[in-house]
Image (cartoon, rainbow, N blue to C red; front, side):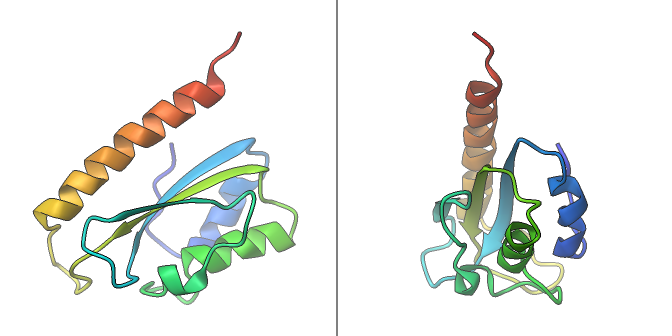
Length: 119
């Protein structure tokens, strides 16, 4: 597991040599806080507008698509976007978002386990 809270382009180094990726980020699409979006980035481009709240020069969607363009993106890439409520520095998570984070953590753990299960 890698936790990255800096520039999303730093993820490009992590993409290299990976067989599969699961990425989690906050999103703002207008859906209710705590809504979980699960996207198969290996099969389709990520909608940049979903990840538009980045405080970085490039958001997660742009970093993933740059990785795709450079041939560094694994075939299996799942992105979970958790709809946030507050994006101001220092704001804490709302109960709905906290619950979504716990649910996504469980789902990622299950998906990784299923993907890495050897016959």
